[in-house]
Length: 143
Ligand code: TYD
Image (cartoon, rainbow, N blue to C red; front, side, top):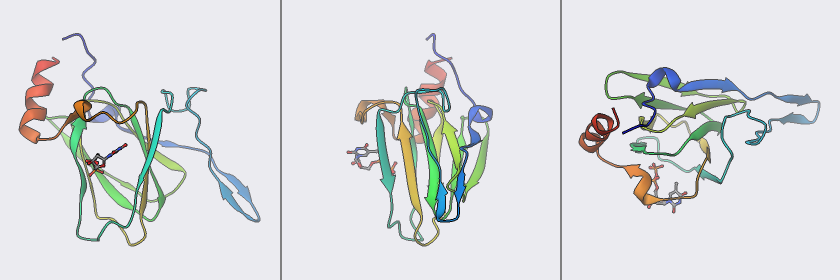
């Protein structure tokens, strides 16, 4: 298949800029000006996660995402089938760019953590790879 095979080096933390004001800080994200490399078609957020729970545990075939800890902190494990690394997100002006074809797990949620996800497409269950074995098969199939 003629598709880009991303690896964990493509999973980058970018600084989103911050407007400091005496009355508080503000961070803005735009899809259109190439700040994150894709147009934002969907926003969702994960909250009230019990301390012992994990999220994610899947990969996407096409979806690009930017993950931000808008409150609190958590770890994102990214895995390309050969290597993995864990990235801690703990500042609202940092975003983890997550390309397609990467297995991810989100763990170690702090109390009050909110995971904001900006995504390049509407929700589509068909875009998910929900088992690690199928993820390995999928990586092979797009080589
Ligand atoms: P899922 O993506 O599996 O959550 P996570 O990866 O964070 O553990 O989604 C959980 C449920 O929410 C699933 O049943 C589908 C639904 N969902 C939507 O309806 N729209 C969305 O944009 C997302 C991300 C999930």
